[in-house]
Length: 275
Image 1 (spheres, rainbow, N blue to C red):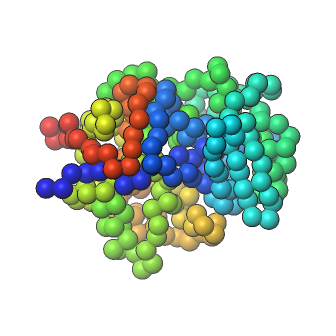
Image 2 (image 1 turned 90 degrees about the vertical axis):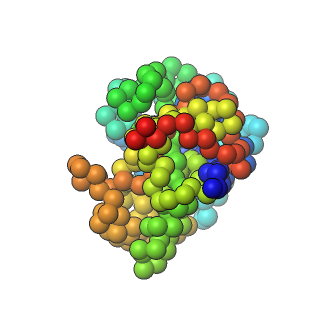
Image 3 (image 1 turned 135 degrees about the vertical axis):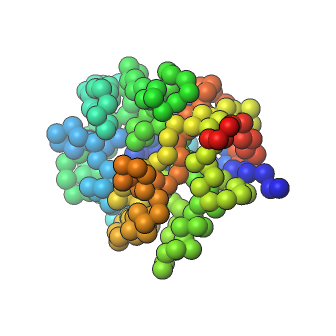
């Protein structure tokens, strides 16, 4: 029997912007290092995503030792220091969370993203005083923290699940629409990852949080920002939960707030749903 392994690892430094694929990723208190550490706010302080601004998909990030670098065709480039003195501290909320402390990244970043999305906005990062607890009701242990992800620190998806979906679509899609952190290969059956309750990867224990409910971001082509009705239309025919939510992929949280994952690492499943 083949052993599930990590095919690819991804971080999304700015929520709803492009991804960075890595062969090795460090875990910190909040999940993958620099994953969804930044967030865009509109002029009312409400967070922005591809749902409102699909052009964000084409903001291409890269990271070196000092800067988060951003590129957008027709607008240009900008560098955001990874470490900088916190200046303007404000608060925002993500999906009805308690107030979250964030630090403004300045006017240059605001102007860059204003040109990308065509309206006023501010780029903010997680402040030193930021704290956002993961809902303990979805996890075995309490006390997990999360950046600006929708729900939990880590999102897993298998190539078996993606292949099953694509077999039902007229036009297959890329997996990047689902914005997962960990893509798994050699998983025996589609949606098997939904049944895992505890897994170990390279001595790192990951605990199941919940299945991931899907929104219209999945209908946006991440290369062109164009949208359609798929894959939500097809997913809704066979992947709804009891509340009518469309589910695809599963959220996990890391038990110890440090560690390293690599592409090619094997997944050891400790507990299944039916154990």
